[in-house]
Image (cartoon, rainbow, N blue to C red; front, side, top):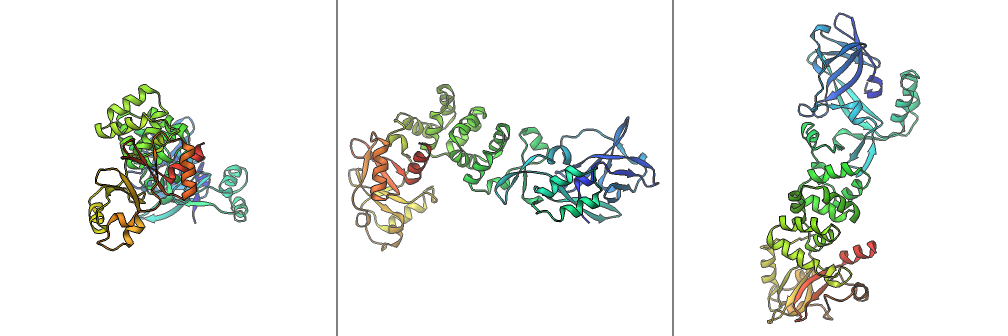
Length: 413
């Protein structure tokens, strides 16, 4: 039968000779050894210094009682250890991230499964209770007999998260390392889901998660976060880490972020970035954010209009393109001026020897960098566009505005 953490807390403990040793005040998981095994039990004994029983010194565990397979003399005095996860202190009533349900929840109780091995009984964490039953157990524990509480909870709706889908939130970077807490599970979430999760966390917890993510994931998440939160996070990051994250962002997103920071901080981060990336972002910062130039992204795919479909595909395979965002190819004429666009879908369905100029969309649409955002919105709406090219005074393409840029601007507006 599984045991709940609330039932284990305060349980009387006896040694191999049947002598009373103390009560369980806390118990710990040592992630470096086994991610779900209760490794140590802290036993309080009044005015005497607490003792610690290890997992291999446990003979049996039942509700309200634990028996050891050694004498009291074999136990060690308790010494705090930062590499131990305290179930009562670090889990119970704390927020954790449910990586399967993609949300932040509060732990009401912890389910423990007894497993007999090599003459001892180990307790393994199987799931955390985030529903009403766990809250009821905590409220009634010690007031109502456990058997009554169990009967009562069986009639309540259950809500639990398996331990493998639990991601702990620990803002202290040193303790994260000691507890072997990683955010690999979070990196598998969609950036928009992770951003929504982080909005429900404290500032310190958000800071801890961003600092521990890889730069590419962190960049994608910051691009989805509320501007105010993004600014707060970046200002508190180590400048080198912040610059690495900015380098992974699209130039327009990086420029938008830096524009919200104090000028001194913005310049410091630009100085930390590689020259080419920093120059692209500096150029975008010169544009008015309420005009086409301030909305555009300077990273876009462009080819000569005389190229064939097969030549373009061969070229694309050798480029580091964002395939998730690539929707349209920009065309240049012999003078490197803007001459049209070709949707990727139309490109893929064309014959191998067809020229790009034969595939381009009509009518030919573009805007100068100083066009206001209202004009941008109107053209996207009128022609049902997914991308619009921005050109300079000589009709050279200098960037593109995508439909997600438009939606983002409208939402923020």
